[in-house]
Image (cartoon, rainbow, N blue to C red; front, side, top):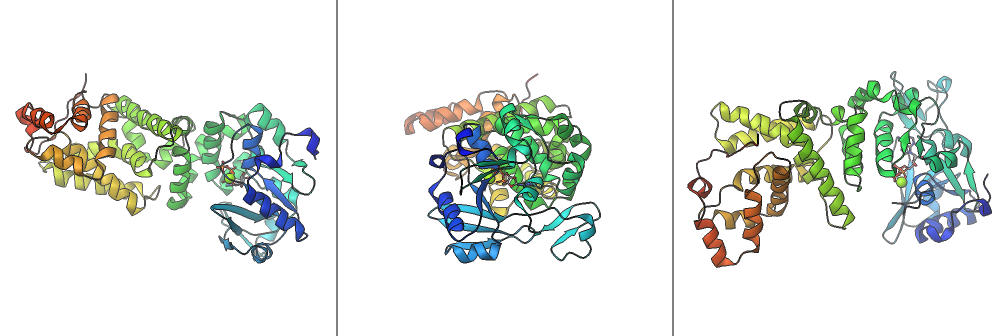
Length: 426
Ligand code: ATP
Ligand code: MG
């Protein structure tokens, strides 16, 4: 126990909603703690994304206490308590299941692989700490006495910037392979390094990601790439051998002839996303996924066109094939894949600017995203520069200037022959 005068966490740093939940539980006679990521972030001087609460009250008891609450999850029941726009996640202290409990215990289930399926065995705070993933995520702040509770040297590891799995890393990754992605994400986000015992097993165990439901991997990919640390996350995923099991076809392209170009394209997209988030500009998963699958699309497109297929159906077929393969790994909800297809189709349309084509293209709801994408392709050296700048000027030009710009185009750019122009830089 670290008493209140020996640590820097203060109630002023905690959201109103979280305090309401903590006090509410406390007043009803339950224990109530902040836990995990929010304390880690505060000790690192960062603004927490959200505040998570743990208590000895069961989910039903929590739900009874707060009007605007509901129990969610089966494998892992938690209660969402809503205050204004904020949602506080409240979980109940949980213990590990002991192996000899497994057959008889109604509340927990393992597969033969060691994968934890259900996890609603209540426990003490200390047991709760031991089943969390990394030491940096296992600190507790007690609202009753404002003390920190540290069972696994969490504070030492946060101060030293070390990501260390609690318990035996191999066993913990086997129980839940997503922990490998979390290791990569925290390393990227916090600039921490992975402790050797926690890092070493990852490359050999990375393929366990194939057992994780694609919907969950989609959520994790969003956290990796849309939280302001996309470039660092991507690097971690590649270095740890995890990327291959999230985007296998993309990784194959990275190892092919044009690998360096694709690497530059992906890094440019990651930088672009990080920059946008830093400026509070909107980002969409569709953009990142469209870029990540673009190497796969172009390879197929080229093949279908070489077989004599016109560009529009070739692209359609390439997109369908690439998406069908990808959703076996990470889900891609329809609302995003629709946008991705549009962004890809617009890459074919952007070179064709004759007549009224440029104006029509610019009216397209995905024009802006497709134009940003085009700029990245030029930046990466996939295309010779020129077209991007033309579009930059065209958007700034008035009607007369636009007419002149279109008239000044060469016959190819007037468009219409259906053949994609693709110059490669030597
Ligand atoms: P952030 O919210 O910044 O992504 P976080 O650490 O709060 O980071 P959450 O996903 O919100 O991460 O999870 C809350 C807490 O639950 C974690 O701090 C950790 O203690 C625990 N936890 C989450 N996922 C797992 C997991 N797969 N295995 C074990 N413990 C986990
Ligand atoms: Mg959190």
